[in-house]
Image 1 (cartoon, rainbow, N blue to C red):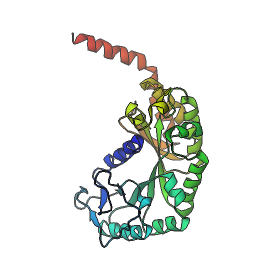
Image 2 (image 1 turned 30 degrees about the horizontal axis):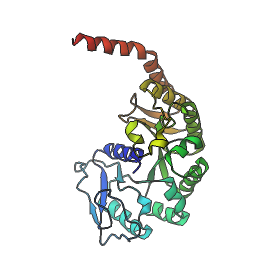
Image 3 (image 1 turned 90 degrees about the vertical axis):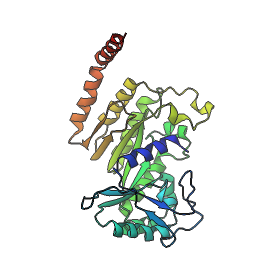
Image 4 (image 1 turned 180 degrees about the vertical axis):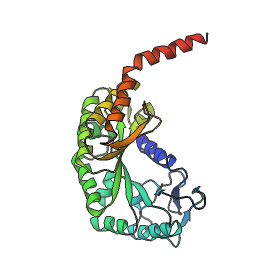
Length: 289
């Protein structure tokens, strides 16, 4: 499985403070917890496991996320029964979300997506590593950026909100500038509610073949910061920014455009003080001896 996809799922679920739901069923493989889309799933034979919900009685539950790998791989008729059942049991939940892929959206009809929205699916998370076709090809997704845009427009048309997860350093050292600028263009072109930033590391490339990884140079922490600054500088739209993943060089969050200047200044300050901070760390290390 794509390591970046797993990183995205883990980050989303960790952010929820226990407000997540697993749907357990014999069709779900124990190891991957993936739905077998060939076997129908219905609410009568399913067990909706709410043991992971840790909200105290009376506490407002802002959102619930179905954490199985791809919500659109489940039989549509089963989903339109399951989602209202969840919302009925958790009547104080404001939104119910799922995780999916652009390909699954393209494979779904507008009619089915609209049914899901009308029955209570409010938002989807999607991993779109980059806005650059040249970089996207590296991850073997067999999609173009044009197709990614079509999928996102489909969600917009039926009224389902979505968050995009993109990856700092996805193009490596060789495609860094192109990746940053073209990803910003994609974000400006679509209507995402939130942009979640992750940073690539060697483990994320482990699912690729050796010949595919050949020539890919992972960015240094400073280079990752420079790419992130370039990306955010070129984003000119209303969007929530979530850069709190532990893989990122610096943690940041806010809403564009109102917080853009503050976020950019935070990145610039980090870069400006980079050498002095690293010299201090080295001096502190030497004091140990």
